[in-house]
Length: 503
Image (cartoon, helix red, strand yellow):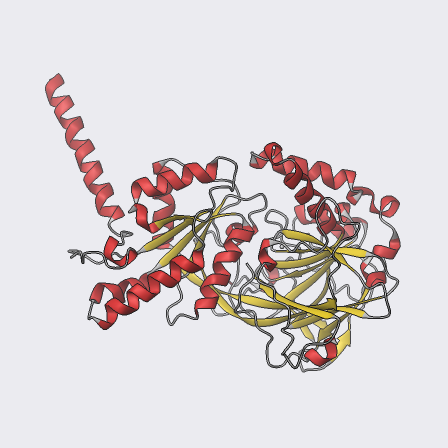
């Protein structure tokens, strides 16, 4: 009897292993496709969901490194890459060059893999943005959709597409479950946004310690100065460009994020745990005065005092955007996920404005949602049912103009990565312009929070929206009314951006 039980257990374990192997074959990519010049391997069945995995081993404390080991143990280790050792653009360019050569030689498997390839990226929002930029740069006929493993602090991108915001398990069972979700997930397009910044030549020194002046974040790493031979170049000015997928923010919230960024850079040993990071972030928000902004934050740094904001009308032409004098942060949102998964825009019912209607925040409609906040207490309304910030506008293009005298600097943040932005000291203008560029593909789960204009199943009935009114021309709501966020080479200047105006 004991022997039978033991024998049965062995059979069950072997069956489980066989079943697991069959499952993993659905993701398997043979070496001859991953390593140029390798021996061609004949597969009985083409992989249903061939997958390339990129892991930022430095994200999530030790979790990134553990996840890298697990993925390499369950998949072909040559299809799993550590972003600290090899940049994704080099990996993907090599892979697609190999696929193209194999296709020319009549390799049917190469054709199938190219059409069905999916990418997993494990890291923070900045890491995910890096991969989105690289895939955009390649301009592929069949760009692979990207699934995101939440290893950062905010994890807004993963949360927006149903992958959660908590660091996942790093054991084999958790990885297999994630792979199964990737295979079953649906492709979903999202808008990408081009950002152009023109300013006087960047300062070499200043009061931006402990981070050097204008040390651009990873998401802006590929910004380039217009060359001296470019006819659009203006003497004494630098032009930077790049893009984002989730959000661009400016003001008090970005200042808190920058303080956290500086502290983490100075003392990385204190930031090894996601929960501890979030606790530290909250403490910094208090010390920066975000919860008592009226006392600690000078009104001269409020959005309306810092700059002029212009938006493009739906039927064309710029107009000034009215912003209440108490607004200290302004967000330009593409996804319904900011500050760890909150939705600042909410779900408005159809409200008439001078340009049309306010709609739910669709991620592929070519519009940004622009929202304002007075302070952290105002932000707490997002935790209430139907809570939202001060809805300012929906637009395909927005322009921020900074003039001399407002302040020495302001704080900006793009897809989770902040920087301290110097403002004009002479009689000149710093301009930041954001415009719609194109779309990229993501992998979404059945728990996806983002909505598509092309997918009726993601639409909710109008009565699901809150019943608050448009707040553009009035004071922000108070009291009971409260109840009602790699840059890439692909971000070139769109043809209809009037760069001469930026001069």
